[in-house]
Image 1 (cartoon, rainbow over the protein chains, first blue to last red):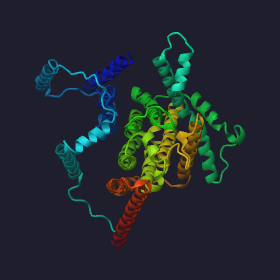
Image 2: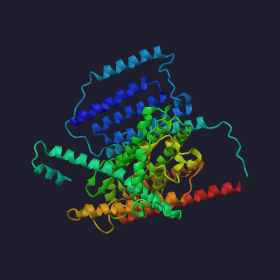
Image 3: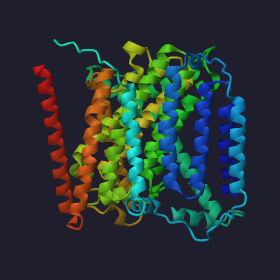
Length: 172
Length: 384
């Protein structure tokens, strides 16, 4: 009973947050709604006994990504600071409609017919260890590829942000 | 814990069955922790004023009650009775949520802290990561408060917070990884048990220092209090806050400091362990009580050290701070993680002493390397 109640609250967080992201007229508020939505997803992970994923969700999505989004908004938009109202749509909205609808329909078409298996046995308790072992044995190559990808992204960001001709430093 | 549940069930009150009794006890304990953690503010503010007063050759508060111990109560009454202002141009909802979020983030850490053998809110097997994840919320609260105030100084304060906290989060996580590697688990209880024969402050001194520095930076206290640098930003992110909402940010800061002291005591001083005594094996309530006293002594030491920092160290400049984080602490902690991982693997199976010696040697080597590299950098700069 308690689990159901928590599930409903988390669903409200996730969906309400998601609706808030696209309907809010203030970019900063959109980012805050996004955090609410991420939080709801973390709650789902807890309910699925995937504590590790829940904590990583909080750490990476809220602790890092959402905060960087807020940071970027604060830096790049004067209007965000002045709480100005923005339009949620741009000129590509009619193009976006079929794409979004197509994605929605195809996702629903995949999700509905699947017979979701329910396991009667309790999930493994030491999931962190299992995950670690899996990363370093059967999924080693994908794991390394993802690491390289992230490093490339990091170096790329540094290269983009670097000044073309760094000013000569004053020497005393 | 179980004995209390059994006792309640044995009273035979209608509707109170085993699971409901457990739920009641759980809620009760959660409430106790959630109330006691912020209440520590009463002692902590008085203590800090007194200690810093002494450091600066003053007496500190001495009017309200004996030794001025009622000063905190007087402060609280003042804070409650101040006018509660929300600026007209502020973002009303974010402005009002931010203070409570800051308190919430600080209290949530206590959910995974083992106070004594068998007394822990939730023995998560990812407790260490949980602590880091919760830290994100306190960053968020400051960011929200700073932005929602619609004040340039507040916004600048919020910018600094993010730059600083993101920088120091990395060495902090790395130090936590080092502890996790040595203990072989991310659960707080297992980390304490792994220190039964040797505290990690002895075998992992470099990790301890990195965690201490990064932790103080995360809590935004002096010498890392650029968030609210009075001389530059007036009061930083909480410049527009008054009354109890300002008080909540203060509670958040002090509870954060207390939580940091708890973490330091648990991760590096063996939590409720007492040297040469097996606390967990003591009969009846003696073990938990002694363990709790032991933990509190260690926590008090760290609280004092943090206040000492505040009383003696001048504030860092922002560029120095960021440089120190990225160019010194991050590489140092990365090298340390690799070195400790190798040492743990090599010393496996040779007993506790071999492991301690191996870890200590590796730590000292990394420290020597860091010092030497700093010397080279400084020399090359001097020659330029």
